[in-house]
Every structure is written in structure tokens, then in C-alpha cells.
View 1: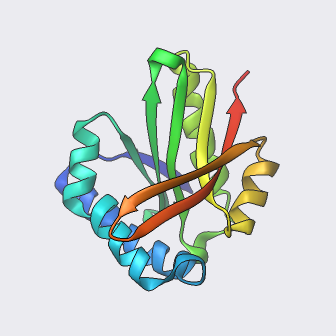
View 2: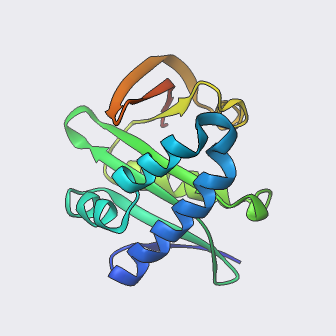
Length: 166
């Protein structure tokens, strides 16, 4: 049984950081390489970074399957322009195909509808073809290209995807 749990405690933050380390290394190694993964994990998904993001209003949720953590999602609402960034949606490779990704996306969409947000958007690395295909199947449309300097000599070279929520 899949459950989504809002992240608030230090123990939950630690769990997310561990999930991030595992998932990012198994998924992104052939896409961006170990050096960029390690840099991004420290900068964006360390325990301190996650705690800071939560304090700024980022909404973190872990996904559990039969009470075991299998993934996590992060959404960042922006009520001023009625949009929400789907910052992260990650599922362990061993849990893919169980419906966790769809359930996490549904959680994000339900959250948005609950606060009258009508557009959900995200960015996907241009080499991450499987994820781009999945988001397209979930109703997202590619709307542009984004290149962002993230420091440390690294850039994120992504496509932007958007979904208008009915």
C-alpha cells in the first residue's frame, strides 16, 4: 500500500537526504556524472539544504510502499502567479511500476487545486529522455529550454514542462 507523508521532523529530513543520495546515484550517473551529482546533492539535497527549503515553504513528501520509503516529491507553490514548481519527483528504481510516481504527481495536483493554483511546471535534464517521456504521458507539454548556472562549474541544461490543471 502506498502512502504519502509530509516531511517536517529531522528524522524525516534525514530519510529524504538518504533517499536522494540513493536515487540520484542510480538514476543520474549516466546523465550528469558523479561529480555533478555529489555537488548537487550537497547543495540542494543535504539535510541542511532540505531543512532550509522547508523553512522557505517548500512542501516535501515521502512516498512509502508497505511502510518502506520508495521516493519523494517536492512542490513549491507560487500563489502570486497561480503556479507551482514540481521541484522533485523521484522514485527508487526497485519501486518503479508500482504507481508511486503517478500517486505523487496526483498529490501535487491535488495540493495545487486546493490552493487555487492552475499551472504545475517542472524542468527535466535534456538527456533524461525516460523522464521526459513519462511527464509527456502525464499530460505535461514541453514549453522551452532553461540553462541555469548552479555554481561549482556546473549548469543545469533542462527543458521546461508545464501542465494546466483543470
